[in-house]
Image (spheres, rainbow, N blue to C red):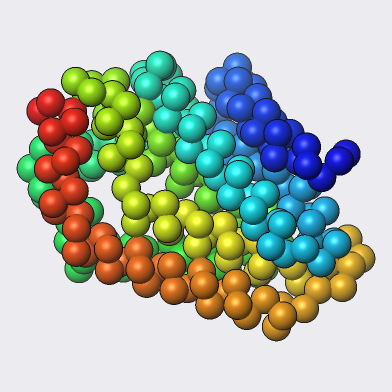
Length: 238
């Protein structure tokens, strides 16, 4: 395939994965199905020593996940709540935060340990499995965040504004950082599995950018999440 068509194939395949997942109706399979369309393209880029291209391709995948999970959750909220693992629990947590300000989202003492745990598990899975387990974990996280955003839009006075605000900037930075780490940390295992040379040491710049992004994520969330909540609540009309 012409490399220029890779993003189109990733987006189309990711959208199709949600249709297949909704048809099958097995929540545990959803993140795996979501990952299948993009993973071969990531491997292809890494095989050609193009880590930057692999990261861009997987960022396209993450964007497709966000759009598809949000749209599905907006249009079929009840079905999405049953299909996306942890979706309903996260929706309740975030709705409570938007309405009252209570919960982990606005309290660094609660959200920082959770972020650290997610990051540690994700990186360990990326290194140990060549991201064969890390990327589905990322899809799981994207799906339950998308469910919250879609469900919020479905109950909002201004759905598009609510969507734009609910995909908060610190979460987007965290997503980009996770994707970057998932790609570059996958290389050693994938290189052994598929027979190509890969030097993790040459990816220090990408690792440093991703770790810096995770720090910015925490600082932004700590600084502006309480005020941003008022913007989301206003868009929702609550």
